[in-house]
Image (tube, rainbow over all chains, first blue to last red; front, top):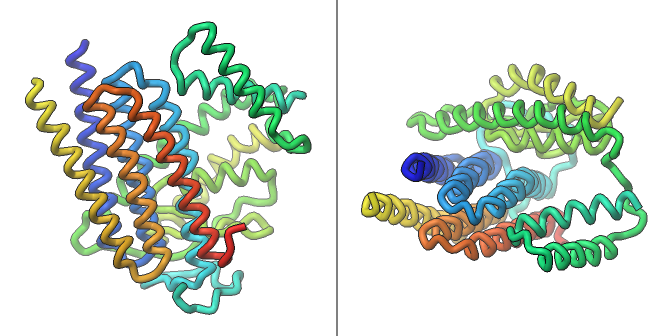
Length: 115
Length: 162
Length: 91
């Protein structure tokens, strides 16, 4: 039983680290803020949550704290992504290589200068 | 009064999860702390959650969680495939996804679900309830948006509207 | 078994510290303030992850408390700075 738990936790730990790594690679490779935010969202939604599940399995004492932190992270990370993207759009950060922009006609863009 | 009691219950449960021991002195201390924090809440806070709908919340909420987790896993796989592809096949763009004029809580949950899945990111909501979503792959999002939004809207309607 | 566990923990911890360095580098040399803020948020998330890993290694549940406080403070800081970027004022 002990060994099975350890093996599951190790698999989750390695998987979470791999997905965080994919997110950081995306953060380096993608061209502008909006696309990069998808990659950072991946780090907190997959990497951190898998690490916390592994922590809850390995040390039963911390299980409730781990679940609480998973709840906070899942509730908070979309709000962070949205607030950064909305601020960037209002400040006039350009979109690189866009296929379509439905919001352009709706919203008065900022002065266009870099803040 | 109902508002006060529900916030006290939520804060008490969070306190117990943080401390994680069930001795009597700890329970009493947690109750006192939760009561003090609930008293500090403003009096005219609107009560968005209705107690008489609790069974509906539990059943529809469970289905909703399954739908959202499935969406998140699918979005994560497609985003990882885009990022690790050497050619970086990006088709970024901002797409309007309609939700309709409904309750604030419902549209907040819908925007949360869309933003939580990697590859889609709500930037702005206008007064007609259109969600302006930035997507990594515009075609894929446009193809999947209608069905996914309909699935989520049905469950959210059960919970918050009607 | 124990040595394999130790090696895996060291590798995971080292990779996370390396990723924090990358995020800090992008915070330093971002092309505009939104990219810098995204890098700062990434660094804060990875700091939480490092605290969780240290908690697993040492078996001390106190580190998870610190991780919760770090996550909540990082959330508040990021949202506040984003509001400052969009409106040029905080309140």
